[in-house]
Image 1: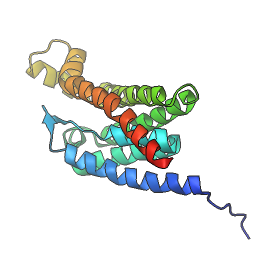
Image 2 (image 1 turned 60 degrees about the horizontal axis):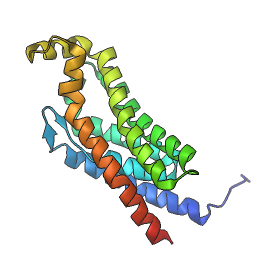
Image 3 (image 1 turned 180 degrees about the horizontal axis):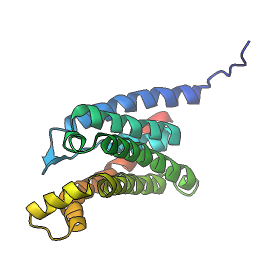
Length: 195
């Protein structure tokens, strides 16, 4: 007979919260597909990933990031890149999603002993930096020639400048600001109800 461990109440709550946040990630990503800045959608999908990092830990936040990546692929948000390089798109999208969840979870776990809400803010900063950073690395590795052509067509002489200004600029600023504002407030509200 296998040695099975009973789940304690805290683990059950974390799993339930992880399930709810998974649904929130999918809904926010699908809704975010309709709000566009240029060719890319603006989304609040990183918020539940960071909240999951703070309330459930790095395993759940990594899962939430992975679900975010899968939803991006299935929603058609990555269609422009899929038409150029399918494996490169899949690798980039899944990796950026999972790693933004992992880094948010690890930063929170390491810093939470100092101050819970400062840890949430730090996670809210590192999550979009990771997400955008992996996207830019993927662009450089898998799509550089095409992006160079896009930049030239848009009047940019430098491909990296085009990537920063046109592909990630406003989206990154919006994600960073919304994460820093919303995540600590949501975690504070949830923690108040847990008491």
